[in-house]
Image 1: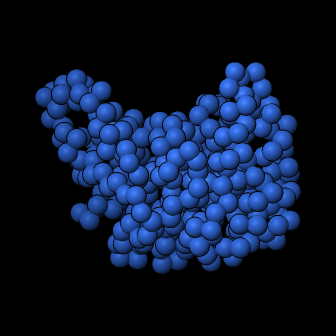
Image 2: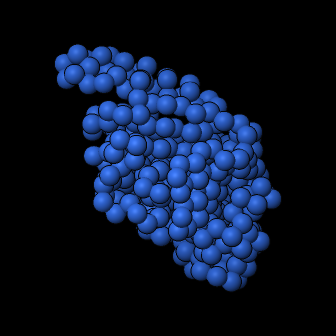
Length: 294
């Protein structure tokens, strides 16, 4: 059920919560972790940040239905963050969505959503005629942006973005969600950069991507593009030796590691993920797992 103001009126939305839905970085699917996605319940709103492969199932496992998500934030347009955006919107429609859902992100967000809905036009037409559904193309409100700053405010809720450094993409963003009781920052994909530290200043929780150097060679092993993949990973992500320093500089309350690369390498233990960040940060550090709440 949804209230007239577009917020979900399902119970338990008064306090701010974070649920990690997908914690594996990179486009390859895994049976142990879904690809990047996070759920934030704040200010009475249900907000989804990124829509990697597996997000719909993880959302259901977390106790939420797709049509209860009324705001979606996309950090950037690598497939591990957007592959299930279209299907999630479609599942929301099939599940009873009949009021607008707002999707925020950098270009080419319009084209991504328009292209998916066009690919489903045959089924959409049949269901509108046969089942009396509202046309989903009239329900999705797309908000493209290319600058940081406050994206929107709604009562006690404020959502802000900052451009981060994730080459070769020029448009990659971190998000900060400020509610009356907590502030949560999600880094998206980035190397260490001052823009993220500024955005995260004094936040209660920093959810940050991380790359473990011990896994890079194994991840690239056997691939024809191994050299290029190694170069991309090193130039575009944040190593375990840097992420704790970022959290310390931003003076956040706790650090949550996610978008683990590699996220399915059993040789990298939880202690190995935590070792350097814990020493550098000096406060609580967690290795994120799918469906873990904070």
